[in-house]
Length: 487
Ligand code: NAD
Image (cartoon, rainbow, N blue to C red; front, side):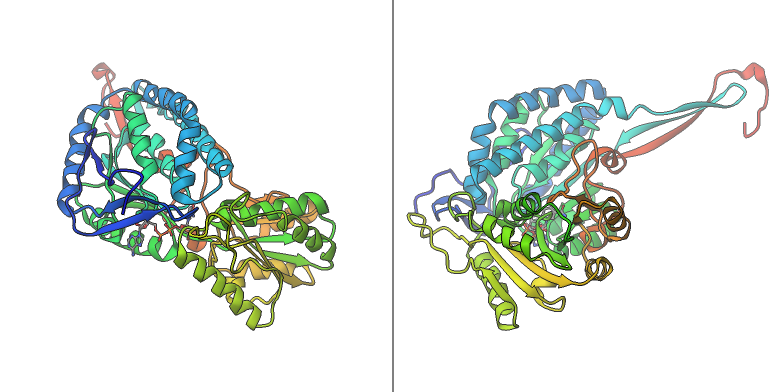
């Protein structure tokens, strides 16, 4: 089969290196089925080479002052801006999202990089004269070789949650891209090299579960971040911490949007539609379950009008693969058989000229009950399930019963009602009249409950805690002042 791009290679010690493995995946574009490349899965020996390269690089990189380290990221930010269109096109090709969604993804990478450039202003330590002539002081020290394991839905943004901060703080990294979208990270490696990142500071090792397990087991890796489904997040968190590594593992989600009758109808309909359909619903922050409180039919009508404006293959991207499309359509059919009402049906969509693409049309399901799978499970497709309740507390009880806890939003014009939801929702990121309440830098990203395992958030100021350890020094330079307390 002819391939558009050459076979995927690892990126180790500043060079692309051949992966010697018989286990090979074929990567096709979800948009139209074009064969893009082949991805061999790395072996333990190749991971070993990457860890060695990172360890060697760490000696010098960790001793480079942070003000110098961030200069790489100032240049990287400029290169992201310069190559924005090209990076966005590649991300869209391998992931299936629309070009404008992919552009927004690269813009977010630029914002994440800006934050990393500000790190020198945030990480200065503290000093205090704790008794006469004695000073205590703290400083933040990098961990060493760290790893970042990422999912398919944001081929560039999720890796950039960790790369700029971890590396600017002095660590050297092994990045494991999703085996479903391996291309974008190759371009990022080239841009970081062009920005002046020394060889070995960032290494990319491709593969699937096997190499993730090898990363979790490797004694030379100090810390692991993971972003992906909850099942895998749990497995990675257990395995990495069993091996005494620092670990932060973000999982899946089922986000509830509470809609009150006083919500501004047009704005609410637009926001909910954008949230359930953006990136074809493949966002851990997607609006997946709307909980209508009282009489909200006028808003549901407007949502359906907005949703019908979405056209698969035009302003609605593809889902990642055939298995995913089948899974999503199965959820819709199951809900229908259980008595829910399909208001907009996205099953069996064929996009003319892109018959080999994997599309699901936008779908709205009304009269979903809290016990149905579409109410409880992460669908990861452009599907909105509507649950009807009588009171805001009934709606909150449904939200609170979810094992996940990434995001929750409320649509209302009442400050009191919004305040109540902010207080009672069991989720790490709350929106008021915002469908995708992703905090922007410098505020950190992270859910609660089964949407996150470990302590702290993955971005923003919280990431400083994760990627560094604190050194505490107690210092006395005045022998003439005699013996002090705790001398
Ligand atoms: P996934 O869990 O299948 O894969 C994520 C990573 O784990 C990949 O690199 C994959 O190679 C690896 N992996 C897969 N199975 C594994 C196993 N058994 N053992 C070890 N490693 C394994 O997730 P995905 O399908 O790529 O991404 C979609 C999921 O990610 C959704 O659940 C979504 O909600 C979640 N997600 C969460 C966030 C967040 O911030 N909470 C952000 C983006 C995506």
